[in-house]
Length: 286
Image (tube, rainbow, N blue to C red):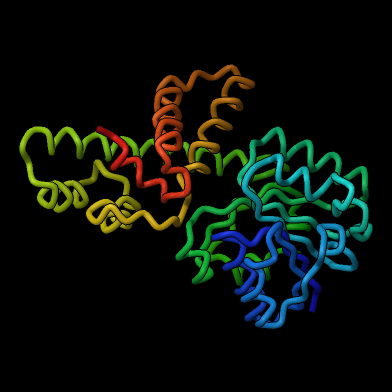
C-alpha cells in the first residue's frame, strides 16, 4: 500500500486524513500547529517536523491549506517539500486557490520531476468526516487513476475536469455561487423580517422554494440560533471571492455583483466574524 504524506490538518484536512488512516494507509502528517495533529497521532499517524520531512519517501503527498501563500510556504521555503519529494512522486493539492496559481505550481513541480494534480473539494466539515466530498480534479488522466483509490475513500465522486488548473477553475465557480447564494438568502430574510413576517415562517416557506439553493437548509439551525460554529469559516469564503475577482480581471470578465458581496463578507470579518461559519453573514446584515 502506498505511503501518504498529508500537510494541513484544519477542519477539512484532519477529517480527510482520518479517513485515509482508518482505511489502512500509512500516513505521515504535518501541520503548522502540532496540537491539531494529536488525535491523528494517537490513532497511528507518523509526525513530520517539517513539510520537507512530510514529503520524504512518500508516494503521494496531499496538501489541504487555506490560501496560495500557505501552499507556497510548505512547497518552496527552506523546509519545503520540493527539496525532499521523490522524483516522479505525486502531489495532490486540495487547497482552494486560483487557477493561475495551480498552473504555476504544476509547472514548477514538473521542473522538479514531481507530478501534480489540483484537486479541490466541494463540501464542508460533515461531508469531509463521512468521506462524502466531491473532488474537482485537474491534471493528467493517468495520475487521476493513481489517486482514485484515495479520492474514493475521502469522497463520493470525482470529476476530472481537464488539464492542470481546471479543477481549481471549477471550484472557483462553485464557491462564487455558494457565497452569493448565502448572502442573497440572508438579504431576502432581512427584507421579509423588516416587513413584519416571522422568521420561522420565512424559513419554512423559502427553504422549500425552488428559488433557494438546497445547501441553505443545512444552515437553518445556525441562523435561527445565532450559533455559528465553523464548517466553512467566513474568512475563507471572503478569500475565495477575492480570488474570483482577481481571476475574472485576468480573463477580462466583469463580476459586478461579486464586488459588492465580497465587501459584505469583508465587513463581517472586520466585525469579528471571520472565524465563524460563513452563514454568519446573516447576523452581520442590519
